[in-house]
Image 1 (tube, one colour):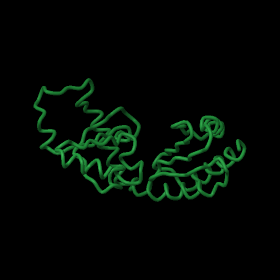
Image 2 (cartoon, one colour):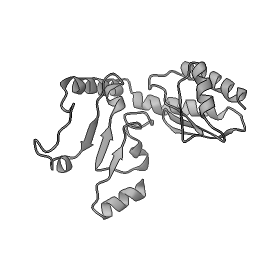
Image 3 (spheres, helix red, strand yellow):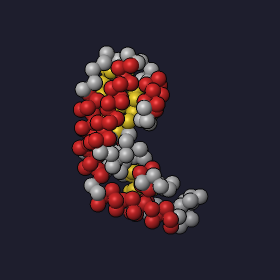
Image 4 (cartoon, one colour):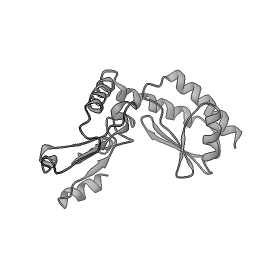
Length: 191
């Protein structure tokens, strides 16, 4: 990321980052790019921007960059929706007031440490930032995700061999412990 940022700056190219999934606290910082100590020219956000209650997304940038658009240059089917804007403002207030970004950072570390304590030869790696966590297997992840669903844990297989966990930012340690007991059970039973 740092190299991409450097190349963009050297060549007068805008660096645009997609933070639709990773942004607004999911990764333990407000935005994932903050881990790289860079400043993109534009940031795309969504999903968490409404707290999951309403479809809303946004583009963040400077007046210099966004100022190239004049009224009528750009349109959107749902752009300028007052309800969506109100929902986004309320969600951002909750995110800040309840310190959910810091919570994601701390509880993500706790969750990752609990997952790393699971001993199984099929686990290749546990990786993550905040509450965006991947459990990498040496086998297909889909059967594990299906078994976890039967244990009331919703997760997603990605890249065939990764189980992705993305719990809500309001998850508690007690709920992580509950989930890890079931994850351990499933991992061991499918070994």
